[in-house]
Image 1: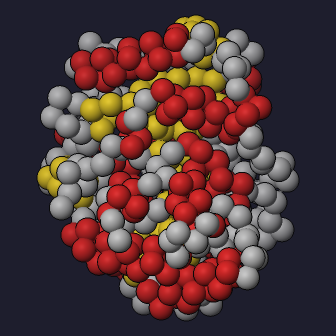
Image 2: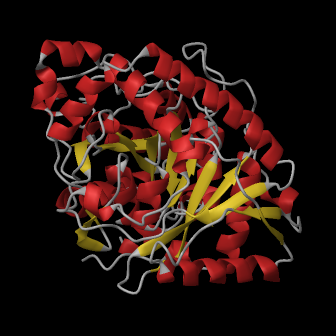
Length: 465
């Protein structure tokens, strides 16, 4: 089988499967091989689920041969970040302290993808405990530092590291990730793939490791915005086992947005101060694409609130609470990054008054975002201002001038999609982020799809053997 097939968007793979030009078994075996080679070489793999995958692929082929087509994900191989429970398969949370952990149930998103006919080929590497205590090094994982397919001396990004790297390297068709603050959009930008962070509550978190109960989101990473839309349709919706899950249905028809002239709010970005000429060049090219499509571009400014500080306070307090038993048992010392240990310990000492103050800021920020979206339909900026940092250096050093929009958007639970928009001078991907109002994933995905109709950045492949 040609390697080219592994890098096709799932929408194109689905057509080949439905017409039976390719079988799910053939596609699954090819991805299993890619996981064993490229995936493992990048430290992107936590567990290859070959036995289950081949069973599901056989079933998909049999059903399609009988005319029982479940939809566009039927027979498509995917990977899941290793914090989603998978019955009888290790779920280690990227943590050296959880290497023997096995659940006897599936996470809701795993169940829903199984019903859609998707084939689970791997659990994918992640930062230990999704970075609950604040990590300093990329090697903060039981599987080691996850390497970037575009340059293996660079980082794939966290905490959904393996999900971003595996999609980018053609080792899975798509992957599930989670985001509390940047854990989908960052690896998507660094690895040159499309990553969707849905609205808080849009996707059930039952069976997913909890880091921050009021900020965790589940979303897909794939080759295109259209791919992400199909995946979101399969996994979104109310779940009685997750009280935070929303009942609003998600349906996506790109044709509904054909010819729509979006009013795009441009977030302020200081390219000069952040020494980001490559991001500035790529972003200006993005604006030209949208001007050509007659979109309205307006400058917006967020109200002056301590978004980042409040988000950090909430994550620290809720994260330490989520892992209190681990901390007090002493097993926390098994974590690979000692900064994580120190951060989790300090989180237990956060005064209730500080946590409640951060929650009040969140309420004010939600009101502020409502006013912002009264002036525009979506917000837009570079996802980050630099390419992926060196894998061996401290993030405290390499994150300088990185920029990003994760603080205010995650604090307020807004949906976002990061799509490739070009490269740095040394060949590292850069991402474009489009942020929407709550439950308006269809808008941001439609605008992202417009951009991907006009460009081919999302079809570029890393120079891996």
